[in-house]
Image (tube, rainbow, N blue to C red):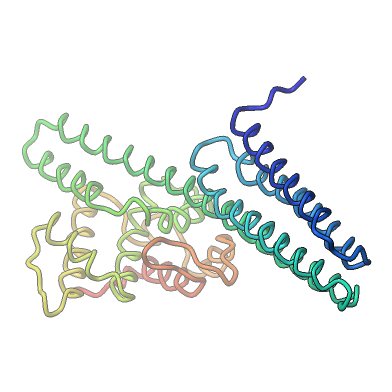
Length: 314
């Protein structure tokens, strides 16, 4: 026999008390026992059943505390529905002699339908939030791993010049945004899969192009911070995009200094394959990326920038 938890038992007990009080009032108050009365009673009893289902959906679907917390908006919809249904049932019982049964059916059915839509929408929203949370954790963990490896590389370098370059790389990872790496990751994955190139080489080709695209589409301030903090560029407060582009150029120079490829040609890629690469990303009409959303045209632009290494110098 399944044992109820204390919380579940208390919830069922509260609903049972409310139901008992409702039935007592419904039959003690001298309402006319017409079809409207019985319709109101049946729909209200159904509302108690719906409330049990909504509470179960809200707090038992997920395993962790975060999922249960996200279930509160769903539970609130069920509670509001039950309260409104009880209030309406008493109203229709009071006017049962003067109200047609079909009016009661329409009102109660509409209330139930609106509640069902609200619960389904709230549950779908919870699923999406949990999916994004999981993706964020994965992205942050990946970036933290890169940061740790870069820091370890600095500690192992004995040559002063090489150590300075490694420190720049470590700073680049440390100041980078862990949420946006999914953008370059998705674009680069198709590139490395198509041409069988190393992941690091693909990122060296894609990242400067992606940075340049972001600088041209509202991300110049964050990239300007990277330019100043990592590469020692002077901040141009009147034109932060100029600082951002200068930092991107410095990043490209650093990649070149450690022997990384920067263009399609250097990894054996063909610009004629760009349409196929974009389709492989399965973007459709949606967007990818973090603080700068990337639609299908953005993927075309980034691949084209990477293909020609046509990032203009500042």
